Image (cartoon, rainbow, N blue to C red):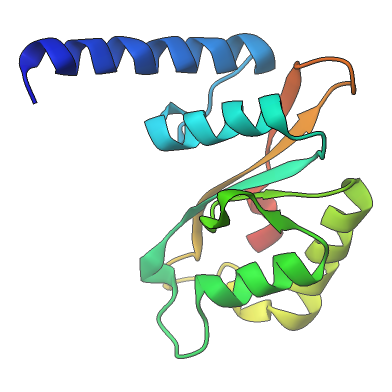
Length: 149
């Protein structure tokens, strides 16, 4: 890629990050990633369903057979989440109760996802995204990693 195209791409990404920062008031480390920022901005623009969870998986944390991101994704979907774009990264929920249902399911059925000393965590970062009102594109971002603590 030429230096001019790289420069333009970088500027476009900076604009996306600034746009998301304006909507939420913050930008987390996870949302500085070009792919994640684009996903969230698209989701905010096109989806009426809120809230959402954005995952940054830590593949090193899945070190036992059967303990995979797919197992967590299946749990999310069983709790009413929709895998936005089928990428296994951004999940939208009809309402907060469904996120609560999933959180309880993690405690009950996915205890292996919890933080264990000396073992890599399954998730580097998890952000909960809440739309402030149905008629607004303003969002609230919340560190939600405690689900796996």
